[in-house]
Image 1 (tube, rainbow, N blue to C red):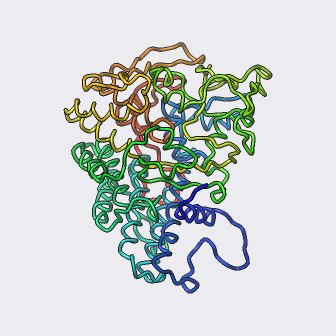
Image 2: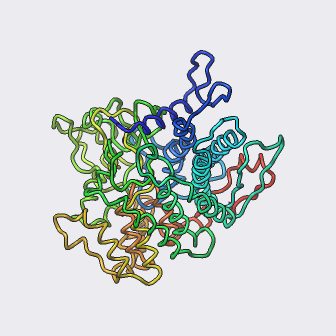
Length: 539
C-alpha cells in the first residue's frame, strides 16, 4: 500500500477528473471559486489535477507508450489466436503506415493538448484571483508553467510543428497559429529556465510526483539531448550541464537492483526523479496501467492470481532479445520467458489456437506480425506484477530517473569526444546487472564508438529474410546500452531517431517507410478545425 499522502492525493484527483459519477449537485472535477477558499496546504491538490493528463497521455490505449514502443525495434503486437488485429491498427504502427486519422495520431495530440489546456485553466484561475492563492502563488505558477512545458516537450517530439497556447481566456472564434519545431523547442527551454529558480528543491514528501528543480533539470537535459533532431543544432554541452545539476545535488543514486525501481511499492526508489503516481484503489480508468493485461496470455491469471484474465498481445521483437548478453540479469528480470506456472507451481497450458492444451512456454520466436500462437514472444515484465493485481497496476511510473540522467550525460560526452569518461558512466550503470560476472560490466570508450550488435533486417515469414546488421550505426553500442537499460519505458522511438535508425533499418516485419515518419502527421480533425495548420511534410 502506498504510504505517501501525495500519491493518494494525486490518485484521488486522477479518479475525480476522469470519472462521470453523479453525486448530488456538487462538482468534483472543477474548482468552483465561491465554494472553495484554498490555503497553502491545498496547493498540492489544485496542482495535482494538471498532472493527470501525463498519465493518460502516456498509458491510455494507443497513446504515447504505444507509439514509442510498438513503432520501434523492441516490441510488437502480432495477430494472436484471440485477435489483436483490430482493423490493422497495431500493425500500421509497427510498419510506420499510420494516417492522419489513426488512433495513435489523434490520441497523443488530444491527451497532450488536454494537459496544456488544463495547465492554462488553473494558471488563469490563480492569476485572475478566482482561486485566491496567496502563500506560494509564484511557486505554484512556476510549477504549472514547467509542467505545461513538459507537455510541449512531447508535442515537439511527436509532431514538431504545433500551436503554442498559453492562454485560457481566449476570445470566441480564436484560431491559434502554428509554430515551427524550433519555436516549440525555444519555448520549452525558455519556460523551464525562467521558472527554475522558483521551483522547490525538496525531494519527496509533498513534492513527490511533481516538478521540482531536479525534475526540471532532467526535462532540460531531454530537450538538449534531442536538440539536433528537433532543431538541426546540437546542444551536447548544455545536456551535460543540465545532467550535472541533478548529479551534483547528491539527492539521487542508482538503486542496488534495477527491479526495485519498478516494484509495486516503488515510491521510495532512490533513483526516481519524477514519477507518475498510481494506486489501483484510486486510479481506476480501464487502461490506466494495464501492460500486464496486454502482454500475458489468459492462463497467466493463475501465475499472479489476477483479478481478471489477461488478453495476450504485446511481446518482444526476437532480434532485440538476441542482443542481450545471457549474463545480463535484465534479460531475465525485464522479460517473462520460458515455462509458465501457476502460483501453486502447476504447469500452465495454452488455452486457444493451434497449441491449445500444450504447455505454455514463451519462446523467443514470432512467425510474423500477421500470425502467432500463445507461446510466441517474450512478454513485458519490467514492472512488477503484484499477486492479486487488478486490471490496473499500482506501480508508480518513473518518468525521469537517475540512470537516465547518467546515460544522457554519457551519450553527450561520447558524441563530443570524451569516450572514456562516457564509458566510466555506462560501466557504473551496468554494474548492478552483472553481479555474478562483474568483468562483463566494464565497457570501454572504444567499444562505445562501435556499431550496434542488433542484427537488423527482415525476419518474418511474410518476405525473404534480409541481413542489414547494425555495425554501420554510429555510436551503435551506446544505442544498445540504452535499449538494455530502458526497454519498456516508452522511449525507444526517440532513441532510434536520434541514432538514425528509426526510418532507415528493417527489423522483424518492418521495412523502412520514409524519413518523414520520424514525426507524426497533424491529425486530420485538427486540420479541419484550424485553417492555420499546415500538414507535416510527407503526409
